[in-house]
Image (cartoon, rainbow, N blue to C red; front, side, top):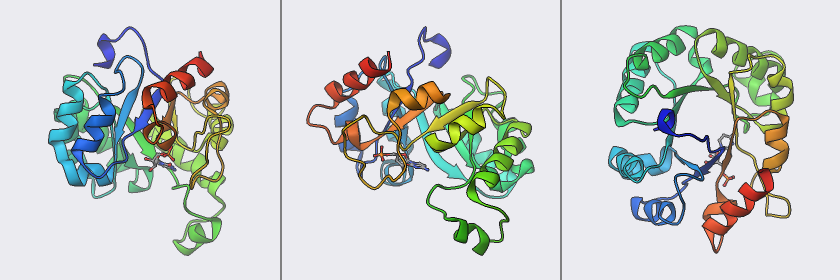
Length: 235
Ligand code: C5P
């Protein structure tokens, strides 16, 4: 687990697959000393807690990306269940409110290996018009800053944010508050469906603590070589 590691891998590989077999086959090509892995909604819904346990059994720190958002009691119980699985990081929606985030925090306080609790502020897929449609005032950046401050006040360890938001956020939150950023593309690689991207090195220099990278590694002919190239770039 993290506390026993004498290093802190910055790259979280998004295992966006539709089966445990595919996820495990990819994980077997990587090394736990070099990266963490992320299990999201599709893979978890198909492969469940068993896969999470298998990945942890192989030595990987797992970010369980299920973005819980419900009444405080329900979210607290889901977070306790995730902590029992032994995940390294998990997340909830900041829009669930301070009571929900505090309940989530308290639910994992006594866990053997305390997971990092990360909040999602505003989904990067939402436009300013979408924010208005759901009744949020102001643009995305304003809402991201407000919700990140609320998440910090509510005991969260950090937020997921776009690399473009890192610079502004880094100056507004405490030094220990983690910024976890997807939307990362090594120079020269395909953007896929991401629009505003940053290179691994630029995102880390801007103040990101962990970078989430999926397809540039998972769809590479040689995933380990792709990861190694990224690690060389950021070293
Ligand atoms: O393949 P790619 O590097 O684009 O994968 C990025 C990962 O980060 C995916 O699992 C995606 O769902 C996740 N993510 C994202 N943008 C966000 C939040 C999460 O790309 N705003």
